[in-house]
Length: 230
Image (tube, rainbow, N blue to C red):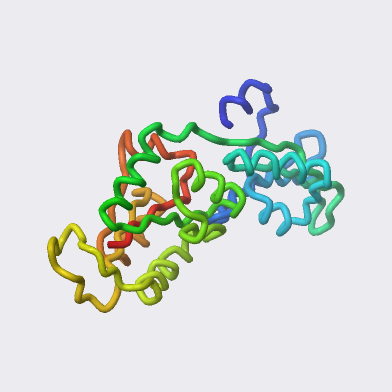
């Protein structure tokens, strides 16, 4: 995205404010050089963020976004708003992007190998349900095991919910070979991003943080996590 923006040779504007909106995107404010009394707000993120700022998405653009999502792509929108004080002068959806990285070829086999060991695998994602379900289909995660549209601060709550509501497994597990499980709830492990998921990784029974090359390989899903249930 940064490379694409640089290639368009944008004018040099100095931001007067920049805010990150967790799970949605970010907003920057720029005083206009030719209109010092006017401020240009640039809002970059998902559809929910556009809705929050009353940026209209036409039906034709909705159709394009839906097609991208069904192809397992995350969508990034850029909206602009020119204002003078509290009064909006102009608002528009300025750009739409589809972001995706090919699924690693061994991913589906790994998911099946875990299931062969009696481990249920799911995904918690901040992405929209359509994209999350499409990604799940590619890697072999069943629809009922995908929780989508989750904000970063909501992931811990979802993990606790799984610990309380998932049925206790009866098949053999890695840690009690040859024995029936006597636990009152499932053993939950979570694989997450070392930056975005750090607070949540303390909630499951085992938290696995990706970093370095492993993190970079999944950086297109910055707000997605896997949860194996043993």
